[in-house]
Image (cartoon, rainbow, N blue to C red; front, side, top):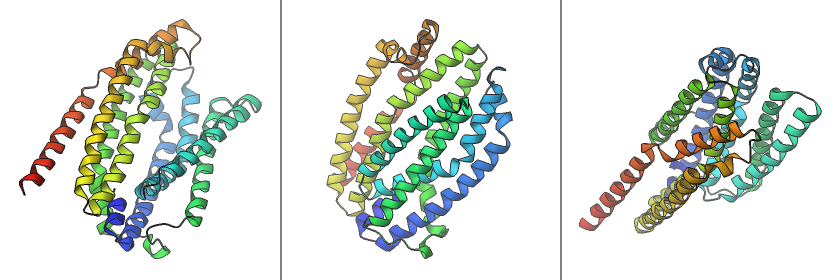
Amino acid sequence: MSAGQKIGEGKTEEAGSVIGSGICLFTLIALIMTAVMVGFAAPVAKLMQASQEAFDFTVYYIRICSAGSIFIVAYNVIGSIFRGIGDSKMPLITVAIACVFNICGDLFFVAVLKMGVSGAAVATILAQAVSVMISLGIIKRKKLPFKLSKDKITMNPVMVKRILTLGAPIALQDFLVSISFLVILAIVNGMGLIASAGLGIAEKLCGFVMLVPSSYMQSMSAFVAQNVGAKKLDRAKKALAWGIATSLLAGIFMGYFSFFHGEIMAGIFADAKEVEVIGAALFSIGLATPASSRVQILLCLVCFWRINRKNTSV
């Protein structure tokens, strides 16, 4: 958002400083996450009450994925750069390539080399690495609307503070949602393998469906930020209104389909009837009951009303 706003203002030098500071900041965060999660993989698996049969595999998966945190963070930073300049196609292309590579990697490491869970984790990390390499290659060849040089890639205190100020509420929101899912995971893991498998299906389906609101959030933040920076407030408000309306309609449709027909989607991933039933139930509850989504809609509407009232009264 900060980079998009600076680009909209025409301040290309400051936009480069924002992105350079972001690269340094998130690289530091990735290294800290890697050290913590690799070192404490076993306690984390125990905290999540992983079953005895799957405990060792869980630890292997956490350690391998955590070791590749730098690629996961790098991909998200690069994706935010593309979205900040109004290009949402390149992240889509790189994700599509990563998905194909991930599927091929799963087949090779799991089916051919018989590496099991470890193979799936390695395939995921390699796919992220490939996506990062492709993105970096595109950035080098693409003409960017900001100036990014080696001297910009530093921890600029002003820019870091701005990034944290804008990003902290979003990070806190995602953190709280993740904590709630981890609590559910810890509870369900104590109920046996069938319940745990059902929860795994439900979480994958929830993640898939939540891509829609996540896409709205990312696209709207970049679009509105650029227009606010360019002092085109009417266009930003119009985009916000349409974003709220269309995302609400999409949410109603997905909520209905998930709550009343969740077994259709769960059945794609489960052969056992017990797993399918549990997965469908958890999937329906997980998407239909959180009050936070209703609160967020109300807050957006109130915020939009206040912005509109303020501008009309001037």
